Image (cartoon, rainbow, N blue to C red; front, side, top):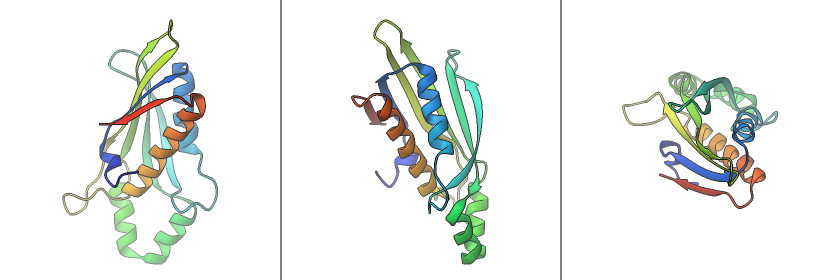
Length: 150
């Protein structure tokens, strides 16, 4: 995991149906349990790509679990960071589906992000954590997945 991975477009090609890929994204975005230090709250909205293929947008609603407790304990600066991050979005989109080969190509990227002090992406660690969870869920669908970050 690179420090700036949240600023890259993650590209995947795998043997899975588009609906299964969207479900993996949804499950990963909703999947952190209980007291995780990187737990966040996301609002998921189904969408369509410019080519009419399935997509989903996850909108960041703030920290959850142990992270929300830590925010309360660390005070104003942590609360300001979280507030600047709220409303950020991660988009997951099916780029193409080859039914004959059973291959789906999809992409994921931070499509909207708040900024602090002009250049810093607040709560970037949360985004990267969830993006890595999506990559793991997709790899469960196809262990021979092709994944790149551009």
